Image (cartoon, rainbow, N blue to C red):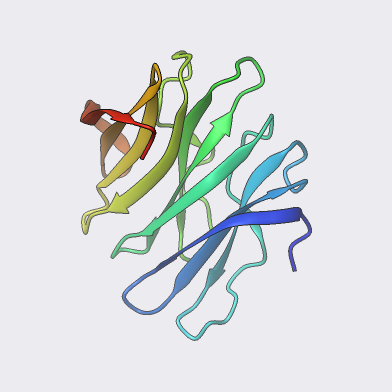
Length: 172
């Protein structure tokens, strides 16, 4: 029942009870370019919400979502964002609960928007205590590096970004 055009890159996460969340990127639903939409379902497959806009920044494009659901019902979305004032991309996240209510008023940047390099293809995992790790690839000349950032509960960064695999030729 999407009101956007060209929904792409669907992703899904499921919790231990069978409740699940589906997210995708589509054009025209957030007022400017692509945005991240999600729909929340209970363990019986009944929709808990209609379509929920995940991103709060609506300038330019938000795409390539990832989702994780923690054992406490925390739902975390990550995605790639382009910004109006630069031509490179960054990674952001936003937390929700399984009822579809946002736990963060705004999206939270993972990568440094002042770095003029591309960050893309994020992934996220949540531990039993609400801690999480976000990974992404980052351009390094003609190569790509993989980074990880740890977050403590309820979402504050723990230390700096960790270089996981330097200079993987051709992307990951």
